[in-house]
Image (tube, rainbow, N blue to C red):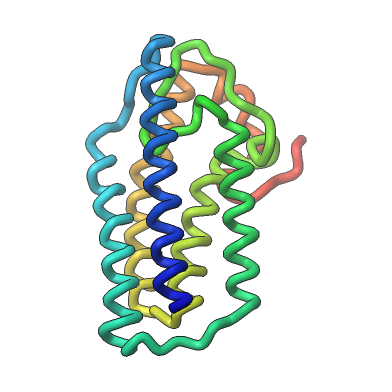
Length: 185
């Protein structure tokens, strides 16, 4: 029963994020923003949809719905969700699932963005490990961790280039780590 509730929760969470992203995209485009790096987006969406299908299949078909609940892993998941909310709320109307760039905008430097360039991607990577671990879905963990690395290897350079070309990103983010906080010099 817990798995079903949890599964529905994360799907509803993603759907809410898509609504927020669509609203933010419309606002940004009214301000003169444009989308960069569109070609990879369909693959990213497909990867996330396939993750849910694989997780459900591995937990309920391959593992017969059997798993051992770990309060420790669930606690880490809750912390990751708090980090997700922190990252999204820090960007406010600039947060999106797409690469939407507003020329001449000042890069957001509050919340986790004070310390690192891509906290939201770190959250997603952690989640793609934690969620399968919570339900002993080891194939899902391995396969989608690799898929996510492949997507991010394409997405991050596209995003960083677009932001560097159109904003003060290169100047203000040069002393921040991509996924882990680094000491400012």
